[in-house]
Structure formats: structure tokens, C-alpha cells
Image (cartoon, rainbow, N blue to C red):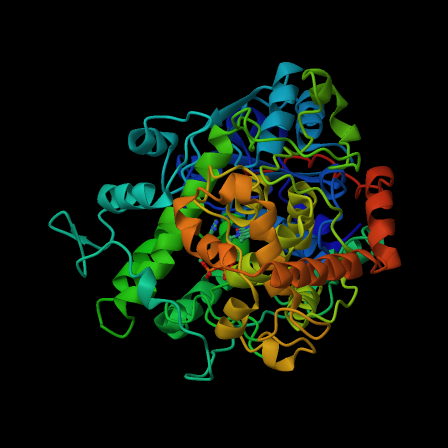
Length: 595
Ligand SMILES: Cc1cc2nc3c(=O)[nH]c(=O)nc-3n(C[C@H](O)[C@H](O)[C@H](O)COP(=O)(O)OP(=O)(O)OC[C@H]3O[C@@H](n4cnc5c(N)ncnc54)[C@H](O)[C@@H]3O)c2cc1C
């Protein structure tokens, strides 16, 4: 028995606890008692159920650090609640969350459970099936969000497939609705967005603060050993794990960013460096998406930080826009489109025989209830992209310094900042025509902050334009010039960003022009693409021939890279193996005097 199990066993419910307390199911991404059902009665009247499911961990070869941060926060949250006097039923199970809850409820005669409506579509489906099979569980509003479905409906009048949704409208509504950075009904500083001021490259202008690092305590060390033993075939590494796993550490992490990095966040938001991989980004996504930090708290803190004039408006507003705008907007789009399944019939589906997602054999009952496997990821491909994702995403060296650096960072940390995700990893995939679904699945397992509601809109929508323009008004693509302007990558690369043809030219540029040429029918009339198309039309036929040859050579070279052995092992093993779940602690005998 692990030391966590020994500790938590002391707080397992008595028969009286089971009868008399209100029982709340805590999903794997809602570790908060600052909002929601946990705030609605005293701790002595509260019981929580937490499921640690190996079936879920095996759905994809999730980054080992993601498993560690999630499981360790889960175990610490259970102990924190237990310390406060909450009765905790912590259940280890080889099954999916829904099946595990159903069996647990029957076995322990648990009364009705309540739970905040899960953020992940996957979990909603899984629980819906369990409810259908007899689980007594009621969903209540998830108050960790800064907005609700009503807000989306008010702004856009509902969802219609085929319509384009501009985030800015939603963001303005949310500013009005919350009063954040508003004065007398007008935006503070005279405008809603200061984005135009936030595009500087970073040249060592001000020192980059080092975010606090948290040495694994005994509980986290146990989780690391558990992950290494049971999920050895997964992506990435546990080495150097230093993320917050307690509420106190999560708060310390946030307050450090607020005091030391927010000031410069805006100005260098789009910058990239090979020697400062994080720059002034907050790295809060992992904690926000686990419920450890709440978006509205961060938004209020960031707005208040402008009061003393140390934090410029452009920084605070830029940060707030990411949370109050993009984060909320993305999750509404995901919900409204049922995970990007409800797009117009004009958006072609990717034609590919490759498996798109590992089949969830643990949830076959749910799968039977739908004509198609409901867990299979949506595969829109408005630009007809379908080439297999090459081995460079698994760490095979491509010689492109930007790609090799960012992929190495992802293998190491399970994280990279927004612009490297968008303008390096996804840019290359979009320009080459790699499968948007495969890219989505890669982001999903490779990043510590990835969940379906956020990774699918970002990759299928914002990054690859696979949804045909629902999420972004144009594809986010660029040649080498942008990467060279915004980073120091090109200075350390074997390819020349100033050349567009020839063996030593940076392939991003040739790929960019051939991407535009290849997609002229779909993108040529896009108002926001007129400038590059005008330049493309002025190119001489001989230059176009050379650009096509350079682009084809680059794609061929990327496709020829061999996948590291572990990449194939990870995919194969994930759908088959089921490490034994840790044994379930026995129900505790009532102690005299305990309510
Ligand atoms: C291809 C691609 C894949 C992405 N996948 C994910 C993902 O799996 N999970 C995830 O949380 N974010 C994802 N994002 C959005 C964004 O890149 C990350 O939220 C951000 O980089 C996280 O780092 P940070 O906390 O330092 O963010 P900061 O730069 O400090 O920004 C602050 C916060 O704003 C929010 N935010 C900013 N942009 C977005 C956005 N586009 N969508 C949703 N929230 C946003 C995040 O919660 C973030 O923590 C993705 C973006 C792209 C382009």
C-alpha cells in the first residue's frame, strides 16, 4: 500500500457519512473548493468521490508529466479536503470514470452524487452512458468558467453551422458583462484591445524572471514512480518535474507571475527565443485547466495590477483577453459544435485510413449507443490536408532549428508557449498539409494542459483552418520572414531565412508560397489574404517552379525521417495494456465521536 493510500484511508467514509453527507463527484480537472458544490455546505456535511482511472490514462500516450501533475494534484486535493474535515472516497479503478462510479455507487450504496458539468466532452459522454446504465448523478452548473452558454447565445444569437465567429465580439461582451477594465460603460484606456502594441521581438531588453520550481514531495515522488512503472511507454519524461501540485503552490506560482512577469507579458507576447523558452508567459494553463486557479480570480488580479501603474495597460489587457476572450470563446465553440462535428457539409472530412484515435475499449457501451464511435475525433480538413504527421514531432531531428528546439522542449516539459505552438509546430503542419486530426491528437497527448474542449478548437480551428474559417478568419501561416523577425531561431539554423530557393534556403518560405498556390480556390477570395495573393500572382513562372521543387523536397525530407522506436510502442501499447489499478482502500470503521 502506498503512503498516500495509508493517509487517505483514515478519511474514508463511515456508514453514517455515506447516509448523511452530500456527496460530490470531483472530475479529474476540477480541483477547487473556491466555487461550486463544495462551497454550498459545511465540510462536516460534505463527502467527495474521486476516481483515479487507469483506463483514462491509457486512452492516449499522454505526456508523463501530464499524468504526474494531474494525479499528484488529484491526490493532494483529496488530502487537502480530508484535512479540512471532508469525507473522502478515493477510488482506484481500471475502468472509465463513468463505469467506476456506477460500480462504486452500487457497492457502497452511495446516495445521489452531484458534479459540475464536466468540461471535457469525453467525460460528459462517459458519464451520460453511466447515468443511462443506472448511475445516480446530477450535473450542476460549472461555475469555474467566467462565462456561460447564455453569453455565447447573447452575442451570436446561437450557433449555426457555416457561420464565422469572431472572438472580438464575444470579448467585448464579456468586458461589459463583468465590468473588467471598464469605466462608465467605456473601456479603460479608450479601446478594448491593445494587441497592436504587443508584437515586439525579445532581445534581452529586460531580464526574464525564473518562475518558482517545486521539488516533488513524498506524494509526488510516489506518483512519479507509479507513472514510470505503469506508463513507461508514454510520451515525454518525468525528469525534472517541478510543477505545483498543491493549492498553496498553485497560488504561489500565480502570485509570482503577477508580481514579476505580467508587466512585460504584453510587449513580448509574440516573441520566441531558443535560450528563453518561456519568456514572460504565465504557464498557468495547466493549473487553470485542473481547476487549481480560477480564470475570474486571475482576471481580477491582472486588472487590479494596473492600478499602481507598474503593469502597463497593454500587458494586463493582453493577458485578460486571453482568458476572458480566447479561453472562454474556444470552449463555447467546442461545445456548440459538439467537438467540431457539427460543421457545415461544405467542410470536407479528411480522407485517411490511418487510425485517428485509440478506440476506447473501456467505454464500449457508450460507443454502442451511437451510430459511429462517439469518441473518435472529428476530422474536418477544409484545405484537404491529410499527409501523415512526420517523426519530427516525436523528436527526430529535422535540421530546422525552430522545430527541433520546440519539439525538444515539448518532450521535456509537455509545454511550449502560444506562438511556438501556432507559428512553428502548427505553421509547418499547415503549410505541408499534414493531417489536422493527427496534429490535434499529437497536441492532445504531448501537452500538459491539453483537454478536448481546448485542444480541438485551437488546432482544428485556430491553427490549421481545418474548420474552414469557423474559428479564425484566415489561416495563421507564415514563411521564414515572420519566424526570423520574432525569434532568434534562424540565427542558429543551418537554413537561410533570407533565401527562398536552393538547398540552404529555409523551407518555410517555399512551403508558404506553394501553400497559397495549392489552396487558391479556397483562400484566394479571402479578404484578409489579398496581400499575399497579390504578391503570389506577381511571381514569375520560373520562380514558382523553383519554389514548388524546394517545397516538395522539404516535405519529402520530413516524411523520410524515421520515428523513434518509443513513438510506435506508445501508440501500440496504449490501446492494449492495462496496468493494475492500485488496490481500493477498504471502507473505514466508524470512530467514536466522529460526525
Ligand atoms: C496549436 C495550439 C494548441 C493549443 N492547445 C492548448 C491546450 O491544449 N490547452 C490550453 O490550455 N491551451 C492551448 N492552446 C492555447 C495557448 O497556446 C495556451 O493556453 C498557452 O500557450 C498556455 O500557456 P500559458 O499558460 O503560459 O499562457 P499565457 O500566454 O500566459 O496566457 C494566459 C492564459 O490565457 C489562456 N489562453 C491563451 N490563449 C488561449 C487560447 N487560444 N485558447 C484557450 N486559452 C488560451 C490560457 O488559459 C493561458 O493560461 C493552444 C494553442 C495553439 C495555437
